[in-house]
Image (cartoon, rainbow, N blue to C red; front, side, top):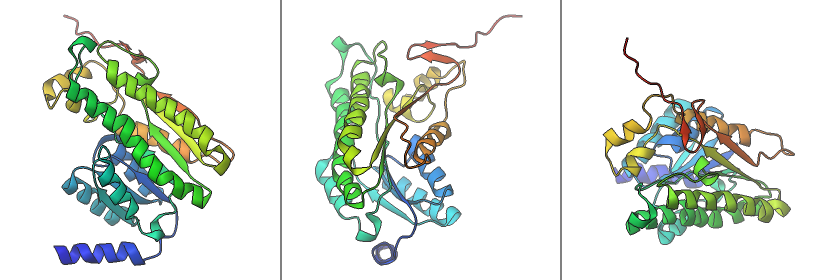
Length: 274
């Protein structure tokens, strides 16, 4: 196994990379995985990151085999600055012309009113959704500036546009993501680098399972009675923003399921007795 790994590393370091490169965080499931697959379909070479090593390696192999693009996988937690710095600093020169950065790694943890909030849940959301995004952007943006091109996509949320009951800290983190995207658009303007926020509504991925700490029954109930968004819907929105001509920047996309009017209003089917 180590021998095969060394061969893979050798290939990454010494084979020239032709074509566009996208770096996608949190690529082991949900929006990140769907985005990685779609970008591979479109011919992008990929740098994918995630905490689950086995899942990350499996996705890398599947994409390389099916789409014939090169994929580098980096195993780290965006909450950990030393891990993040070490892994992103290890990217070989041939891979540093990163055209697209998708800051997808994010989560909700717990759902309770502010007076009953769990400190560990709060830290987990703040460290992932805000600090993790900042760590990755801080390390990748200079590469884009050096290349004089790039597009930063931040996965935000409808929760960053409107608050809802018991969403408090999660909503606050996604408000921060929207604010940071606007700030990035200003800071990156002199270098021709675009910045876009994608703001999904209710989407059925692992999101609610994580929010409910692994309780799949509670997670399933969140989407009962209506058709939520799917991961592919968000991947399509990301690619739409990226595929615009050089003079066009999509500043943000708010995407909701048809059954959802805003953060707290959802039309659910009612079972009627016949």
